[in-house]
View (cartoon, rainbow, N blue to C red):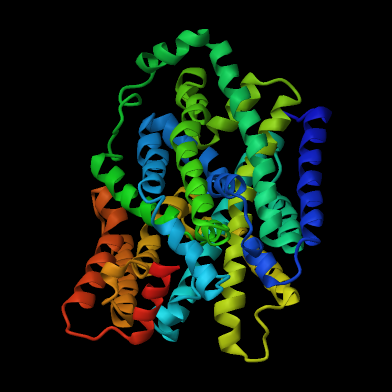
Length: 486
């Protein structure tokens, strides 16, 4: 289906809005602290919405839409529900610790404190590992939006990647974190409008409001079950642990939202807003995807279900709105990731490569952002070599986030202060070895396959940290004392 002129106008206006926000944010940045952490002045409502939408991408409407088509509502319970619970139960813990790290130690990157908590080598190992992981993770997200563009316009995957990546490249480089969070807010509004439009369109096309109760009995067997094999209770529990780590700071871009908050009160409100949005909003957003087997029976490629639904149900203009929202989802998550990874490269990696690099330089910050974004686009152009979108998002990210996140987050908890650099490094390495094992040995249980690297990493961290009788370095005791008292 060829897009109408009205659809193209709406999409063009969306892109112009993103660029305009980038230009506006350009003038809010005076130094790297403004560029990477908004000067520590991020309002709670902006932080919470940005934290929420930064957890979405176009992959939700490709990979997860396919699972909604084939496995029904189970995708909500192992994905969105576990994220929401993971954020809400710790709203008074990790968000406050991240905010205190900025105030007490003036960090701009989530990894800066690791030099004090462990040592330089541990910090560098985690920084380099995380940067490489995000190259592939962000590349997968550019590819996912290109698949949707292909459905709507026939545009080739490579051109779609260059369009979505190129627009983001400009506004992120211009505006830094202020551009990211303001565009996140604009993108959330677009996502909200598009999601409600699709929800209403599905109800009108079927049986009206009665569809809310009648739909589930009409779906294929298993699609109305909370747990639908292989997405079992065990798989949901594994993802609860993974998402608890990820959304409390294991995903560095989400830690940045908390780091940038001005006070305990504001950072708690930001976390709670994000958590409640995860519990409520996906129920509306995913409803059309759950109804897709009725509206589009025997679809050859379930990954195209959301795009095909849009073309089936919506008139000109509204199709453009939905496409803009799909761009918004991917660009929100990727721009958030890129800004934080640029901070890690700028603050943690480059100063240890050359003493001539000034980490507070705004020019350096923008240069690093531009180069890293370009590299993610190049990776996206080769994404099929890395297992496709679903393989990257669920397998690679889900399996690798644990080995990196465990020493990062548990390193902030006083209970684990005996766990030093040996525990952290061993945790990362054994977790990565476990991941390699899962990729090369056939494991029938998906929950075990996804959670094994995380469990191995956790057990290693605790075992090595607690078994030997070792003294806690004074600098570590001082760090915890400062965090407790400030």
